[in-house]
Length: 279
Image (cartoon, rainbow, N blue to C red):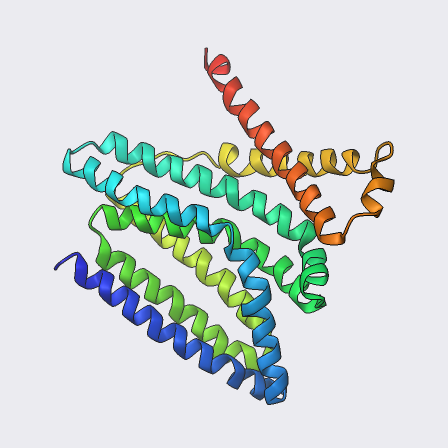
């Protein structure tokens, strides 16, 4: 019960606060100056068009999070802190790898996705803005699951509520002044805040190592290099003429596939070269 009650409270309180947010957003948009229909339209574009694209890759991190909880709990029961530390470092690394890739995909192709799939320019703008949410969203998901596996369910409960309260403050006080952009800023700020809280709590529980150069700087450089490779591939030879006959959405998918393959290949090459460097 000590572990279950905070988990139950976490789910219950977060659902209540999320429901309050869904009610308040159109209301605050009307205070901003929009009509009722325009407010609902803007909210619908954000939650029904932009967010599904951003949240789609999180299916992978959510699955990883489910697997991490029993793994970490088993390692803790055995007193194997080295295994827990290794799991934390691995989770942070791959969450950041995936998040940085999604930043590139949604930043480069978000506008095209919004226009080609939904025929709405605002949806594309929201996707581009929310692209920066990805690393923090994936990081908070996996680190939160590890904290639960360590028995810190009360900690995750308090931190999740604090992050959502922060987002609600953007809704209540930011939207009347800045419109729907305030909600986007609030989502980014709250996920960043939650990720930092989770990492701080994990650091207090189990010492773990993480290297900003290898986990952030190099993947970012690989993303930029992959974007250059993708641009070269689709601008060389007869490829531009062939791509012109394809639907826009399919073209974007092909670009994203080449970008992802290049990025993954560079990361794999980097990891394979590490042993020889240490030797």
